Image 1 (cartoon, one colour):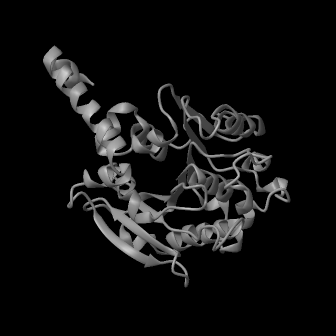
Image 2 (cartoon, helix red, strand yellow):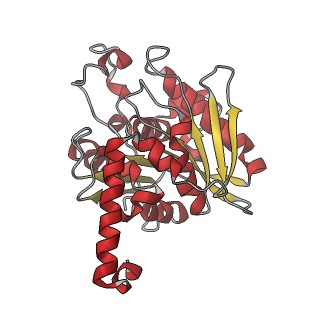
Length: 299
């Protein structure tokens, strides 16, 4: 911000014009293509297509900061209503985390109709357990592994962190996580309104324990819940605010950050180089990874 002020009125006008142009380009072409196109080729060391299981969708990419060892690790799951998405589309997320000295793992998981609830949770748990076992070979610290996700991926991150069935089934445990990060995740969405999501969860026979909010407990790993107040896709008050409150009432550490002007997609887009000026999402995420729960339980 200080460099913007130092630029003077003309500099501010130029920056505003460039920002407007960037947003216009986002609307005119594939947003993810544009965001990934802004990542320098030498920004991080990338190991792509690592298998964490035998199936084609059980693959992950690893982004390593240059010359780091025992760095914190974030395993990231993308959104797409559990029906779409590809790890290659989130290169900008791996770049953002690596720029903060974090080893980033961006993982695929099976999607509907190939798989529904809870199969994608089993895949994600396998990816996290694989990371904990092998990430030291890529400069990461297996004792500082965080799980994170946006939208449907935020749901996955929350369920892995709060419901011990999934990591337990992969030979791990939520207690081994350093923390979890949810960006605009749906954590309390019964009854399911979105028709395209209903078959993913077998609605109306969706079990109540499929909802992260029902797993809030004192033993939850530290959590960071990020949301945009302008989100019209996932209700921020019912989901992020509601889960943060439930975790705090249970005595767990839960930090809630709301950005006044961000919508659903722009929240994760703000991690990218062209859009970081929109909100300090990357700063807040990096601060949490560095100090997950400085205020103690029930922060």
